[in-house]
Image (tube, rainbow, N blue to C red; front, side):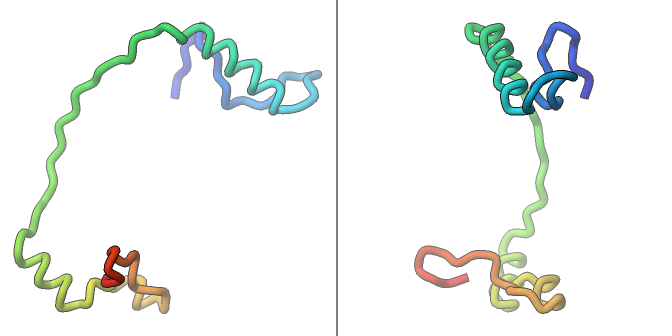
Amino acid sequence: MIIPPDVVDIRSGPAPGESSATEFTADKLAVTEERYIRASPEVKEKMSRRIEREPIGELLKRLSGFKCQVCEALGLNPIGFLKRGGEP
């Protein structure tokens, strides 16, 4: 990522002679915060597509017991999460 020279990069470590990354980062954050405190957010539009498999996907998931086949093959817990009722 290219950061313009007038924007403070808070990801870097301490400058030579500074005692800790925490102090250095906090100072940089304060400068950046002051600069953009009244800035308006930039609005960006995004278009995306996704593939829906409709009823066949739901049927196949139900038949497999809602298990992750890769996790199961690796000997890991194949159930990623449970619904509120306790079912996968």
